[in-house]
Image (tube, rainbow, N blue to C red; front, side, top):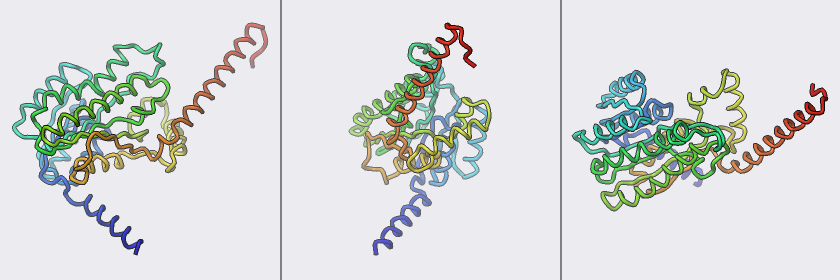
Length: 307
C-alpha cells in the first residue's frame, strides 16, 4: 500500500510536469542566452506558455533561441541588452514597460563573478560594482519600471546562489551581490504580495555545469578534473544540473507554488551541507602552501639549494 501511494505521487508529479501548468501564460526570461536560461526556456516550452519575452546580451544567440521558441507556436519578443551598462538597462526596462500586455511571470538568471581576488586587490568599479550592477541593480531598475505590469497572482523568480548565505574566499563581489538580490526579493515579496498577490522567490544553486566555467580553465581536461572533484564533494555524488534548477523554477512559477513567497529554495545536491568542511580544507591547504613558500624564502636567504 505504501509503495502504491509513493508510485501514485511520483506518477502524478510526472504528469503535472508534462502537462501545461503554465498554458496560456505570458512572461519574461532575463538572461535567456545562458545555459541555465536556455534550460528554463526549454521547460517553459513544455509548459505551453503562449508568449515569451526573452533578453540576452548576445544578439545572435538570442535570435537562435527565439527561432526555437517560435517553432513551438509561442509568440516571442526579443530584447538584447547589456545589463552591465546602466543606460541599456534603463532602455530595456522602459521597452518592457511599454509592452501592451501584462506579465504572468518573470525569471531573472543573469550573473557574473565580478573578480576572484581578495578584497584588498579588488578593483571597485571593474569588479565589485560591475557584479552589483549585473547581479542586482539591473533587476531593481527593471522591476521599478514594471511595478504595474504584472497580472494578478503573478510569480517572480530570481536565481541567487548558496554563496548568498555561505560565502567562500575571494568571492566577496559575487556573494555580496547575490545576498543583496535575495534581500531585495524578500522586501519585494512584502510589497507585491499585498498589492496584487504577486509572489517573489529565489532559487539558490551551488556549482552548476555551464559554459561559464570554461573561462577559468586552460584545457578541457582541467575542467573535467575540476568537476570530478566537485561531484565527489556533493552528498548526492553529483552537482546540480541546469535542468534540475529549471524544474524548480517551473514549480515556483506554477500554481503548485501558490502558497510560497519570500523564500529562497536551495537546489544544490546537498553541497551547502559541506561548505564549512570544504572551507576548512581550503584554509588548511592555503596555510600549507604559505608555509612551503616561507620555507623556500628562508632557504634562498640562507643560500641553501631549494631543489
